[in-house]
Length: 262
Ligand code: 5RP
Image 1: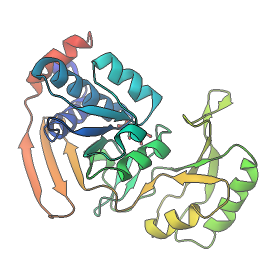
Image 2 (image 1 turned 60 degrees about the vertical axis):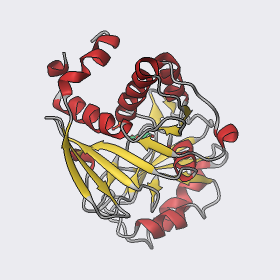
Image 3 (image 1 turned 90 degrees about the horizontal axis):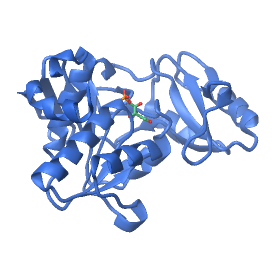
Image 4 (image 1 turned 60 degrees about the horizontal axis):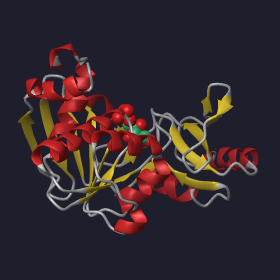
């Protein structure tokens, strides 16, 4: 069954599998959003159901909460937990310093709050997410609906003086309607092509009235687990500078694929 998965799904599965090994009994764990994080949630659910792992999860979106409940993961809120041991999440891009672009799934606000409230943030990704410079992926910025067109104009004006290559700002749509985040906010996608200074851009964007948060994660990610289609995983840690390579047995994934009815 595992063989029937696309190489990209096998890569996502492998990264998630390796990251789940970092979860220890008793931990409070931030649960990311997206297709790679969904593998991690399913695998954690399996560990809870079949190996008796005792953890509490804090989901970063309504979608992840639903998936986690279906997988049998005990959940709590960030207000209850206050501080987390570990967050595992996907990313849209990561660079050599492990700065990230996130928010492709529109959950960047809760994702950033949860990751920042964690001792450790581990990103799980396939190799396609690695870039030398951030910015090919449009940068999501969450804005309040009130006066959003003014906020958009202010962002466009601000971008003129910053080290970016493109300046198109698009309102994210969900069919015919504007996309709404779990907080009911709008998302503007900034097509910048290249971000010269992520730290500066992040600080400047968050100064603009109407901006709630942006999808740049600077100095938040500690470790990235990169999955490959053949089950190889590479674990890079920013603090130690260590890079480890391992191989995941993808055939051992058959249980979880059977659970998914695939
Ligand atoms: C959601 C995110 C996701 O982590 C990001 O979009 C990556 O998703 P995927 O694993 O499906 O590629 O930031 O807001």
